[in-house]
Length: 420
Ligand code: NAD
Ligand code: ADE
Image (cartoon, rainbow, N blue to C red; front, side):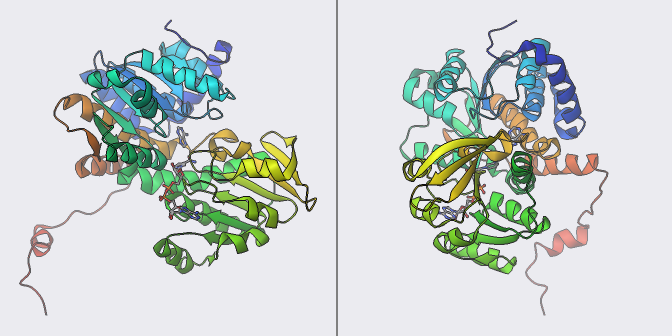
């Protein structure tokens, strides 16, 4: 068995059962795994993946090793690891996993360094901590890196910042920017799994409550849509005027966070930005307000300010901590320490949606390896044909057929002479 650090190898049987359960809902990734097993496009390639270690990413790992890759996997968040999956990947699939649910920040960074010490040629990142550590601490490794892939919006933002400072010496595939990723994972995945996390943590009734969704991007749209489906009275806050009009026309109340702070009973941040709920907003909130975050990092709610103005935290239930504001005596409840509530308090997005995201990841790795040395450094998106092929495979697996353009229609769409 290769090197590993997981909670308990005795959980492996449970992990295998959950991997197989998820696999039933991941037909596109499964087809890729079967093709990889025949063609071995990743033979001998050392991959380091810094991802949420879940049943779904476990199936991505299976696809990569079927393609001939050697893989080391570490967590992309201290609270998101599923320990049974980590155990199964080590024991049943001989994958090197360094990830524990609840690991401290020091362990998290130590694991990332272990992944880089394995001299990876391809990096799979979710949030860009792996690449950022490479750039800061392992600059000479860049020479052997064929390329990296990035799963999430925040990671792509960080990578663009690195590219602007000429720090990226290899190609990056922004998997998040594939249409079959962000239109589905960010919206329907985050929309459902964020509520799954909130409900598992609190067991509260959502109907009739004022829910404030901070940020109406891809994730925010999904979270607001599902809040409405649960019967909430939904308020959206935004800084982008176009997204704000979209929220208005989608039928939500839109207002500044300083006003929403007084009205909300449940607050969900999904901006990828910092301190979008700040000290003054915390001071204005009602007694019993629930705060949580589904954005990538735990920076969206100003928890340092909360600790300064409040006593606590006092554990109420798993993933629910209460703070009492000294000035007013009001109690605020923070879920999952302000980290990704859907992955900490629930299981992340369901496999059917991660099927699309991780099909993109597997094909992005193959794309990088097949074109090694030919793709310029910087940020790239997978070609539209690959995106469309993933969508086609998913539709086929769902038993859904669509139409094709006729020759006449194809021609019409390229002419200018037919008008009124
Ligand atoms: P996005 O860019 O589509 O949307 C973010 C929105 O937040 C934008 O409309 C932006 O204008 C708005 N915003 C920024 N600052 C704001 C502020 N101060 N107040 C109100 N709105 C503000 O990004 P996205 O794809 O929706 O991703 C959002 C975050 O969620 C990122 O951190 C991303 O990495 C993360 N993410 C999490 C999961 C998950 O599993 N929980 C899945 C996908 C993405
Ligand atoms: N990001 C969101 N949901 C996820 C999941 N189920 N597995 C891995 N990464 C995720």
